[in-house]
Amino acid sequence: MQSIPTEMIAEISGDALRGAPQKYSDQIKHVIGTGKVVLVRGYLDRDAVHSVRETAVALNRAQPATEGKLIYRDGCDDIHNREAPQFRFRDRIRAKLERRSLRFRRFHGYKLFLWNKHDDHCDQAIHDIILLRNRLYGAEPDFAVDMTKGFFTMVCVQHYERGGGYLTEHSDANFHARQGLVTHFEIITLLSKKGVDYDEGGLFVRLNGRKVSVDDFADPGDLVIYDVKQPHGCAAVDAGEVADPEGRRGRWIMLVPPYSVADFLVT
Image (cartoon, rainbow, N blue to C red):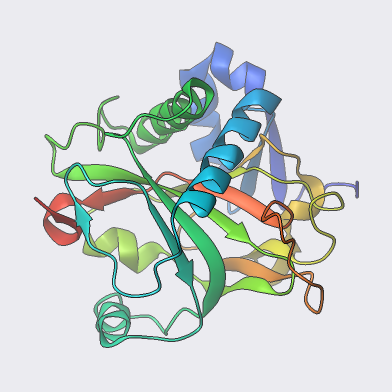
């Protein structure tokens, strides 16, 4: 593993964060305020990482990927979709509302909902990341969990396949602002290892004009936390290679963003 650029990325122990969550959450917010990315080491253990990935793999095998418009309903099943570099009218309207360019991407997405039961390790991992997210937001522990405050959590597991899975550089600031969120933090949970699951590409964040390839320094179970205003994306994963027929190799991540019930959920 390469030497970490400490002027760009700050490391915090996952065990330390779990042991003193308020102290280290405050430290994370301070560090991000200086323009750095925070890398939380080993926040999830191997069993949790494996469980989340296998939950997505099982959904892949049980449900063909949807490529059209996704409709989220209260109590709906988990969803497997494929994001491809083509845009519907809805995508263009959303980009206009969020005052951003169209976001080209190619990956498999697995939408997991809190009202559905998954493997215990998977559900516990999701719960732990949501608690951390809400602490960083300065919100109540149940924010975007029970929908009483107008938000719900849609867990997004993303699989960037070998053969060129990617996400163009973008910022999520307007997405947060459009929903009325005043928070500035995003948490990416890493579920794969560069050099093992894939060789080229992966997460980058643009810091002070420099494109930093964060995946070069990270391991499965690590968290990448950054300001949503910072441009970021996923460089093409093993472009030119053949996708794994078993659907396991490639880059895997998990996100736990809150979504507005009024804007995204059909009740």
